[in-house]
Each structure stands twice: as structure tokens, then as C-alpha cells.
Length: 221
Image 1 (cartoon, helix red, strand yellow):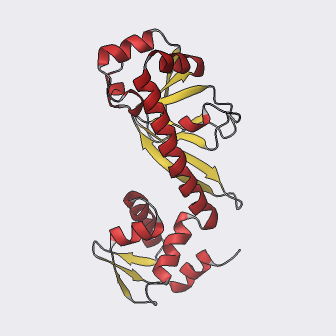
Image 2 (cartoon, rainbow, N blue to C red; image 1 turned 180 degrees about the vertical axis):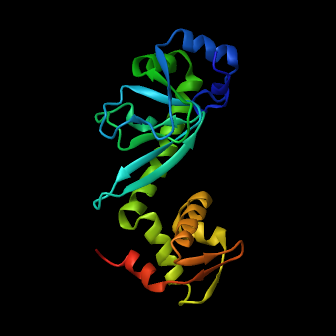
């Protein structure tokens, strides 16, 4: 039915016929979205688990200054905000945006998922693992963003590593560990700083070109 679901963490350990049989007894819908289309808005009631069948999405929030901040990027066949499906507060904490044309989403009704977990303990175990891992991840992620947003954190690290004109070795592992961010997020942020002329970037080093601009980014507003 949907071969990609065999690679989804929700169905880990199950073969395709078993997955198909579970879906046939469940209620679900699919929809396709264009690039930058809003799949779901923040504070929307979350009554069905969204699974990415094709493409990728990003989770965004708007900060106090009105700037859009990317919380996470996830691709097929991952689940979207599974930890918010059950419990007393069933509303999305983020806006969910399609990253590319043809992004396809399956929405598995909450009741159908509940019955699926009752029918198959592997699905139940997988779901518990997923929400535990994602809850831990997002608690760390949101805390880090609440203290200092991603670009400001990178700027602060660069400022602490040298003075204007200084060459800073591009130690990606050390920087990602120190900032608690992904390699992709670090590379994107450094590229944005380079485009603005704040730094000069190569494969092995970062050179600070505009220290005042970096300082302004991390200064209290």
C-alpha cells in the first residue's frame, strides 16, 4: 500500500503485509502540498498522527521580534509531533511547512492509531519509544532556543574564539557538540553569516570580518 512505511519508526520490525493489514483496519487520509505550503498551524487541534510519505517538512515558530525560526527539519517517513497526539493538550506547538513540491502527508486518525497499538504490541512499543525520544530532544532544543537562538549562538561562539581578522579552525564536531545543534544547522548558519559578510568561510576555517555586526546579534535587545 505504502512501501515507505516499512522504514517508518512507527512500523519498525514489521513486514509490509502486516503494515498493510493494520492500515486496512484503520482510518486515514493522505494529502499533497506544494513548497512552502502550510500543512498545519500552531495551536491547531491535533486529532490525527501525521506521517510524511514523500518529501520533507520543517517546524517553525515566530519569536518575540516577529522573526520565523526553524525548530526542526524532518523527512519521509518520519512522524510529525507524535508526542502531542495524546494527553490533555492536543495542540501543535509549531507551524508545519512543506519544504518541497509534492510533499505527501498521511494523517492517521487518533482512534485508529489507538486500535492499531492495541492490535499490535510492536507498534505500541515503537510509539512509546518515539514519543520518549522526541520529547527529550525537543525539551533540549526548545530550551536552547529560548536562551539564545541558533544564529546568535553561533555568533557568540565565533566571538569567543577570536578577534576581528583572526582565523578560527572549522572544527565542526566541536562546534556542533558545544552548541548542541546538528551539522546541517551549523553549516546553514555559517553560510548565512558568510552571505552577510560577517565572516569568510572555507572548508577548513572561519575568518571574522565584521566583529561589530556579530556583537550586535548577541547583544541584549
